[in-house]
Image (cartoon, rainbow, N blue to C red; front, top):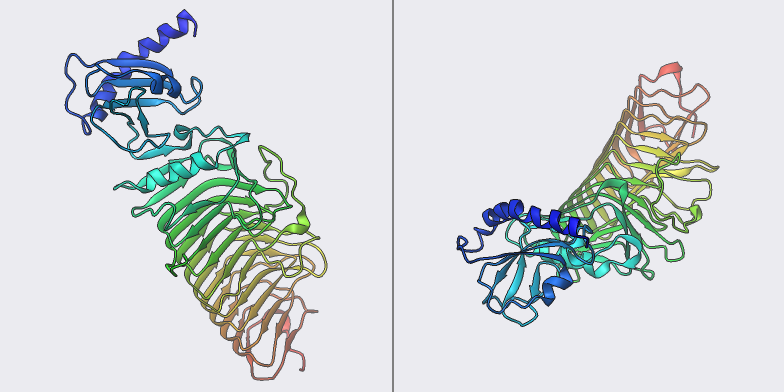
Length: 448
């Protein structure tokens, strides 16, 4: 470091140290005159510093993890009698083993504190996972910050028993599309595997991965002990994964807001491009397992392509039982013929689909009950809505559609104030399994 840079660095010490003392006061006694403030370049310098003879409470201002300004530095306090296990981010053993250097973080864990580089090359899995575990172990609301960068992960980032137990609320926060997590793990490793965890949020991330592995983006499910994940939020997460974007399996009380799966119209570019083929796309949001309860999906966007895998859906629910599903204000686009099934619900009870735009896409409701569909705009040249199995007690109203089909096993399907073209007909299995109310153009249902 040049003499000029060193002078600036030392000049900051006096100013920052004053604030450091204030923060440190909640962990250490008030500073005494003999205490020192050290200025060190990197974590390696901190580890190599002999501390024997330094007063307890000595502070060190570190400029970076491996280099100055890389985001991994910070303020550390020497705790002479501390024997905590070093974790590579918040606790470091001194060179001569006399105590520990403790990071002052205020409960906020930046993954760069643990050596993550975010350069699209280095494997950052351990650094990110350790940050998650450290934030989740606190007594207050924990927060993990993943700054802008491209972070390679070689296995799933885990929350739940056996990983980050997160007994208190935990937020994992990125910097929008500027924070890219690149999944380079073998098949069967979603980027996030959240099993049996509760009270967590994942926000503002871009997930990508190589098509040869076909991994999912986020899995929220139950642990091996059948502990269900609950009370979670996924907000502002964009998936460019070759598998499913978001898998909800045996979970309870969750919100997906402003999430996207393969958004169309080239609305984003990957910081580090991935070899992803459109034909590998699976479901955008996939609800599966034995039972999913009280799941809300707001402002979800999915762009499907002509070469989609058969059975693909932007939103698919096929759990044995799904209760309390709410979908609203989404944008779902599909192309090709036959059209992609943008919404495919099975065994779903007490649900609503409100204010959504679906272009060139089918809606399929199989064995669903007690539902409301309203203010839906299904523009384009292809795509219908189909009620199958024993679907019952569903109202479809105040919407634009291109055609409706109702199978014989359905009952109590009410079509109210729908805008259909005059050439579009309502196919139905019996004359009494649905009610047609006040539909424009004088539309009359055809015969079975």
